[in-house]
Picture (cartoon, rainbow, N blue to C red):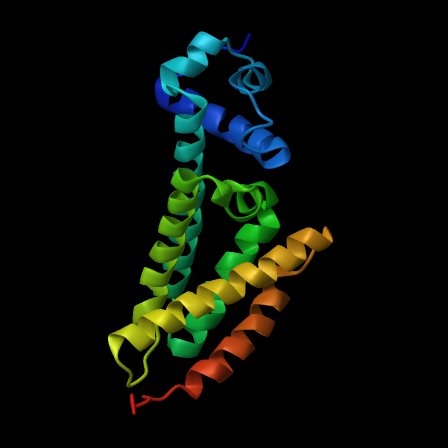
Length: 197
């Protein structure tokens, strides 16, 4: 049995343990018993914080998504100009993937999209990241075009990350970020308004 923690600290501990369990075994392969046992608490303690496994999983998706979004927003806010924003944004994203495979796997690789409620939670994270990226696309284009390109940038990072995580090898997040930032920057510099004719 673990020592008594304040409620907020216990919740954080339970989320951290659940993250590892769900990332390894998926939603259906992980029970509340598994989480409670790994956390060193009884099931009633776990249920004091999360009414169901589904509630726990949704809370975890939201927490992981918030951490990723926060890292990207902070990194781009500190940049001196547009090119540096692109580099810093990608660096924050790939550093998050490199440092926290379990969070990436939970959010983008655990089969969460097969459940509509979980898929919507993941889409919310993607929309939130696109919300951060959209105003960084400083081109003379209409807002819909700008928003579409923001989702393209998000997809670029996610697709490359899937490949890196699937390969299972460690990677240098700074190098990968510069490689993808070069591609995105070159593409964004060539963006122009396209007439609908």
